[in-house]
Amino acid sequence: MISAAQRETHTLHLATMGKIIFYEGRNFQGTAWECNGDCSDTFSHFRCCNSLRVMGGHWVAYEKPNFNGYQYMLNKGEYPEFNHWMGFNNCLRSCQMIPPYRGSYRMRIYNRPNMSGHMMEFMEDCPNVNERFRYRDIYSSHVIEGYWVFYEHPNYRGRQFFLRPGEYRGCMDWGCVNPMVGSFRRMRPSLM
View 1 (cartoon, one colour):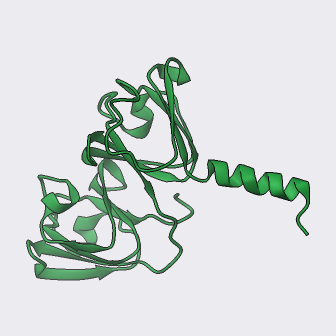
View 2: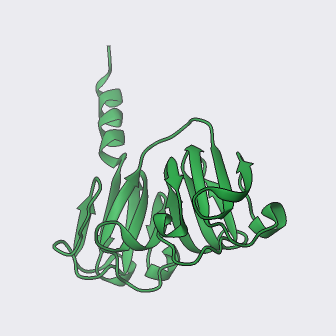
């Protein structure tokens, strides 16, 4: 039999499992909006976002509606100003929750579009693509297992691009106009 305390703990856990709170003002001030799932257009809920709290789950926030534009990976924690999530401005127009994943990780990267040219397979994080892959540009990718994040610069810095399992025949498929990828990492539970 489940005790009242266990039931309350379980209910609290479910309530915060996937929850993000957006604030129009810095330092969690002004109009606030709570979100518990994917939202393709946040404009009807708030005009700008200068701070946010991730209460549970792991999220990708996008600069534009319909999951387009700059992408920001958000883990549990507080972000009192937009530069704390590496934001270029206070504009967040859509968000998606990253599904929990505890399986294996495997991805192939290619130095040409359409999964052609030099290929290398990875199952681990790569802090410097040029050192490991010997090419600076990744034109296509095939994510076989797990969720991954590409970063514009080495050592997990710069613009971020979230990749789910699937084929990415060109860099535009993961939301980038430039094929330069400096580093990438697995979205592991310890990072999430």
